[in-house]
Length: 267
Image (cartoon, rainbow, N blue to C red):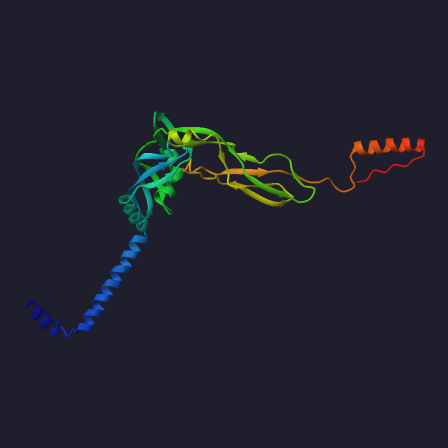
């Protein structure tokens, strides 16, 4: 019945189906323009994101066992506010913190202050977000104790040099020892860790670079890379004589004159 009334109304207004389609399309475009315009404006609002902390703290797990809701008042666009609110409903975000920013409270508890959290605003909330204030003075994370052991790092190397060049010593590793974590039955068999094979050919200058650790069945957990440096000694310039060689030559030449012989020092 209502369809008949609607058709009668459209007939009186002389509106056909094509006009209705154009009207609805225009209405949709107008709403889209209005929505995009409003979402592009900046707003100040309170947002919160669940965060799991990641940090290298000796003797502790490098991932916190808890997640914390970090809430702050920020100024950003409407698009960013929608994105942050969707992030807050999803899985906790893992943020890597510098160990100097996490302070030990007691046992397995560590905290980071709002002043230090301000350095991680972009990592937590994303680009284009300006922090106004955090809602709490500090945030606490729990890093469980883990079995660990400090072991030296040994370089595995295959090096070759150009003629007359040589290394001045062993490859320097930084750090030269690392802390490894794992179950006791894994750690008791580990007395050192090795780099992957460092292969360098025809060296004539010092080399420097980042080298990863070799993984073994005895220790399947990941190990951070180390910096390796090899120093190369260059040959002395051709025909350059040291003060000692000049002294020996002059002494021999003096003796030769007395004995009627001639001496030359070959370079």
